Amino acid sequence: MERYADVGLVLEGGGFRGIYTAAVLDVFYREKLFFNYAVAVSAGAAYGVSYVSRQYRRNLDVNPYVADKRYCSLNNLIRKGNYFDWDFVYHYVPTKEVLFDYESFANSTTRMKVVVTNCHTGAAEYKEFNGASPEHFRDLLAATSSLPFISKMQRIDNQHYLDGGIADSIPFKKAFADGKKRAIVILTRHAGYRKEPIKGKLLLKVAYRKYPNVVKAMIDRSYKYNKALDELERLEAEGKVFVIRPEQPIAVSRLENNPENLAKAYEVAIRETEQILPKLKCWLDGE
Image (tube, rainbow, N blue to C red; front, top):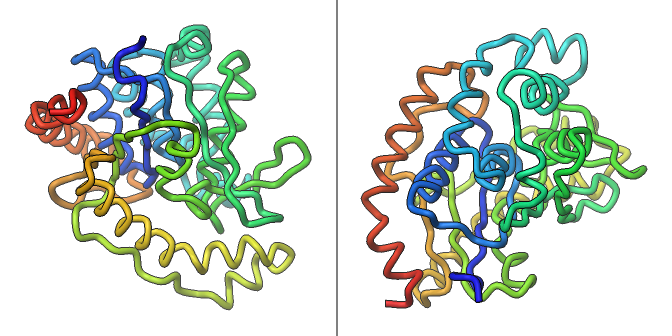
């Protein structure tokens, strides 16, 4: 029986704050802590795929590209309707510059599900990567990462999708529903953080007037997010989850495009993760 087969990984999003998740997962790689299940949202998926493909520190190799205007810029938003050029980010870079090992991903012992928000229903859907197709890889990561207002809806199988965090920001319930008894939850917000209600509801309702269910999901998001944090506290006290989160607010913005700041945040996260490793290993072994 596989070690820790009862444990699932849950990866929150948060834009470039996901560099924290990348660092945590690189420590896991060094410690040979691999799990057979992961469910990830937005940046959690974007940074997490390199852990699934077993490409240590690959996210750091990609990091310099965030300063490239093709990666993210107002010019992209004006010209293409997307602040991030998804084809550049999730297809060109991994197939031409910092190669992603699609075969290793497809054959990995870790299977990953990605959360997307269905714009017609406003509900979360959980898509499983097969890793066989770079185009499938690009489209799923683009869908889970498409933030309202700065991204177009992504079309997959005749459905429109936006950022998975709208409907399910911290998908630990999905891990339990899929049979996991315990979960390691990696957050990109510090302890005590609570999400504020969304502003600009009228603009939201106008911009997405054809999709009232996704508008409702966006408005309800802060309540659901904060409720999820309360549930995590209870589950953590019961020993069912192990939460890993930054000790202090991560010193990068959601749309950060400064590679040096991201590299510094990565190193801070490495040190913090190393400090909690003994406690994590005790939890994993049921001690």
